[in-house]
Structures are given as structure tokens and as C-alpha cells.
Length: 255
Image (cartoon, rainbow, N blue to C red; front, side, top):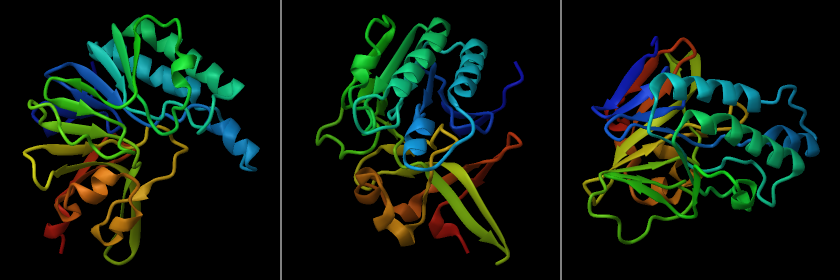
């Protein structure tokens, strides 16, 4: 198995410099923000995207499910793209995606994202697919999309909260000349809890991103990132196309 794994923690690993998180102790594969059907929606709004990403996503995820053999795949919100009832193309793409990958894993758990209106209707009849409206827990891991505030009371065993929604991007200028922009995992401790927040980059190649920077805190989408953590404590794990992950220390350590 020629797959590289980059450690965020002893049990949390980035797979092949992709927006894929492997939770080793529970054997979970986690992705977020697929935005299936985005091409049709953008076309309606006047932006033409020449390539449908759905088959590429199916091929990629199927490969890692077969190679890593996780117990479960977690889709952490925004499986579809529109904010309303699925369009015909969205419904087709979501069903095509789930039917293609479901034979490769025992269980698929979906947490509802803000784009996933009526998604429960689109997944009817799929026995190994479960849909959770607010959050999903597995041991010390708490999964929620990230568009809403956290519940006031969390399970006592929670040590990691894993979200999507933000589509985090590292943006920096090197030597005041070369500008880099890359999707990134965000890892940051909570202010008042012994809990670590992990933010996944968007899986969709067509999704725009939010630059993570303490100066632009008010631009953040997730209330969890805005209110529950100190952005100066964020560490970023930027993804490179050559299967490399670049770890940037917390902002307070930047010179």
C-alpha cells in the first residue's frame, strides 16, 4: 500500500496530502464538503464548469476505502451543493456516489451540513447509510459540520471536535514576493475545554476557501472558529499537490 500518512496527532492522520482524515484508533475515514452537483448549480448562475467532479470523487474515495479498509466512512456535511431540495442532477450524483462507494465500507455516517436540505430523501433505501441532523459521536471524537454553535453540553469523553464548513485556506507571501495559497487542515485547542478542534479542508475542487488569519476573524463562517478558539493558536497543515504536507506553527510563533 503506497499511501503516505502525515500525523496531526498519534491517531489523526492526513492521507496522501488530500482532504482525507484517518482516525486510526477508531478506523474512521473522514471527509467534508463534497458539494456534489455544484457544476449544474453554477451553470444556472452563469458560470460554466467543464468537468463533473462526481466520478473522480467516486474513484478516489473507493480507492482509499479498499486500500485502508476503515470500519466507517464519515461524510461531515455538505454532501450536496444547493440550499434547497436536490435538483435532478444533484439527486442523481448523490445516489450515484453513495451506491458506488457503499459496497466498499460497512457503514457510512453523514452529518447534515447547511447545504444538505432534503438529503435524507435522497439516501432512502441505502441500508448502510445513516444520516444525523446535528452531530455524530464515536468514542472521544465529536463530528459536526460546523455551521452551528456547539451544544452547551458535550459528551464527557469528547477530546476532539471535527468540523468542515469553513473550507480553510493557508495564504501567505514568502520573502514578500511569492504568494502561496493552499487548502489546509486547521488544528487548534479550545479556550476553556481540554478539547482540540480539527477543521477539514473542502473535498470539492470547485469550492472556494476561507483564508485563516487572526486579523480576519470576522470573515470566518463557522461560529465555532469565531467564538470558541483563539485563532493565534491555530496550527495549519497545508496540502501540496506532490503528496507533501507543510506544517505551519501557530500564528503567535510567526515572525
